[in-house]
Image (tube, rainbow, N blue to C red; front, side):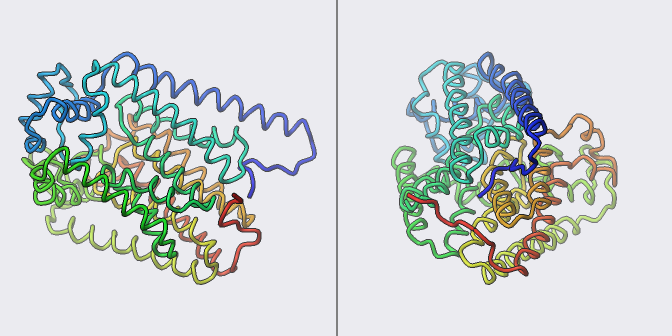
Length: 442
């Protein structure tokens, strides 16, 4: 395996400047993350954290957990704890019930103290992610640190809002590292523990199952079951029944509130679902200028584009598996990791930290095949996702056909996916990669 910045130029001065540039970049990225993410989280509570904290307090205070999905009641609880945000009134919908257990150990701390602890844990996970990447892919510590912090905007958003995605992404890296080092049961536990809370890690397990890594999958299944049973034991069955019957389906189709099943018409979600609603559904108040008034088109367009993207990912992975066997697992995880964020009905900026494992796996795979243009294409699109000027693109939202310009994250994910499909199909035609490593030495 190779470093991201493996250079063969014998000119030492050139090497020095390359390293100096990377050190300067690391310093700048660290400063950005601290100023935009760490410092605000240490001094004030922002929009999303009250939802996590209030859910834990409800559980800790033995209140009626069956009402977690009653948005009005939940907001009253937020107000009673003095945590209401004018930007986001807060709700538990559409979180799965086990989410209420996330903050339980900190439920009786002062809210700002709890956020500071969460921030410290997230920062430690940032460091752990860098170490894991360096160990897995034989990258230098400097390269691994720069790679992680290139998602600066996404990291800062997650820290400021008290989101758990940095921790979840680090556990995905940990699970894959444990798999590579021949510890499948621990790998499954690391990959499965957050699935009942945030579904994303399940895509790694699906790829593991396709490659018949059953020990990893079985361990993950046991872990998922254990978390689910713990949640039922603590919260009761009623709230889980409400989630399965009334919440889950709406969540998967992009309707994130039980009380409001109308299209959200919001650019924040950056998904095909909201884009097609904007383009084709007329709403006098919320969407007075669609591109075309065609209420049947959003559903049809969604089915067609998501089916096409899924088919492309499956066909590419199967062709790669036939040509390269076990070596195709890493790029498959990368491709499906991108796909999930691309076709999700609602994504947020901070969720892009989940690309650490997919993007790194693809970069390492391409470098192992001496496909530098493909590796740097992935790195470039990944880096752009960390520095999107939303303030300059959001004014196009709701302006007919120009609305597409308000979806830069969706466009970048689509470009990353299409580019990777093309590069991987070419790799499949070339056969087994020379020097590919599927497991690290113990």
